[in-house]
Image (cartoon, rainbow, N blue to C red):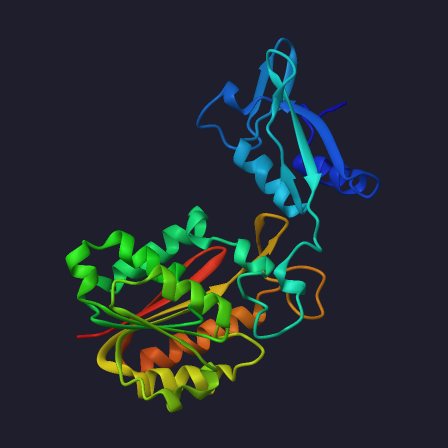
Length: 308
């Protein structure tokens, strides 16, 4: 087993990349990160005459993610070292590769296995956005691309029951099976769900809303991004209404949420389109006198509230 003691991270990275060309699983030996707390990656420590460069478990986990691997549970090898094992992800095991259809995101799809609220990076950013717009005060809430209702479920969990029951929730999605699940899970009487084409909201006569939420939906290839976004602000938002727009900056594959969205014609994550769309929305909303923030990492949340 290869020992990396005082080797630079670039050497470990290069070795791992080359080794993964020939194997689905690699193991190497490094300094046990639990030896010290509060040390930064690359700081030197000498133990029993051997000089090591310190790296935290977070740094080692990040390296695995960049290599499209999952990091297995480290195993102690000696008083000062552990074995780190990376296992290649099955990149074909992803809903992103599914053929576009009404049930690509249905209950029998790979997407149905994804539970975003259980991923801390998503949960933290979404919670921040909900608190920023004072969700409990937004009596009418619209969610486009609601799927089985996970984004409404978090609202239900964080609000007192009486306050939650004062809300009127409307969710829209094109998946019949997902909406069937949502209707089953939200029987309190304050939520309405539609199986409908988001391009044709006008036929539903929805009225206006105090909060509009759409996460991972507006950039769908089946939607006209800019016209739909502008119509939401102009025709469906109340005068003092707020928005939460979630832009995916990740891929879901083989049980993992991997940072960085795949861009067309690039073999790696390239963020130009994502940044352009967020900037367009931010600039448009600021011109309409909204206060706009952008937070998050794997999902970037644009939150807009009216300037009083």
